[in-house]
Image (tube, rainbow, N blue to C red; front, side, top):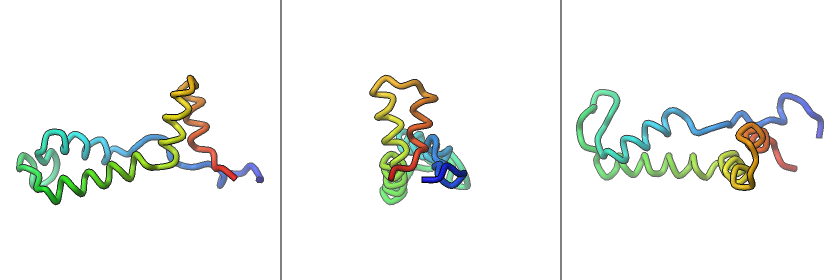
Length: 86
């Protein structure tokens, strides 16, 4: 495989949205936007859960956490997580 700019994943860590969704889900209250302070409905909580599940299932995050568990440094883990396989 040629080593060019297209052979690196852009992923590094979950998005800011994921961080906000996680805190909203934990508090069960909207923390941003026009509904701020209002309680989350079951549907809205489900949307956040699904989004967070998709983020944690991301191949890059899986590789990153696996590398950290193997004792790699954060820098090494990031490089591993951004590598495309095959």
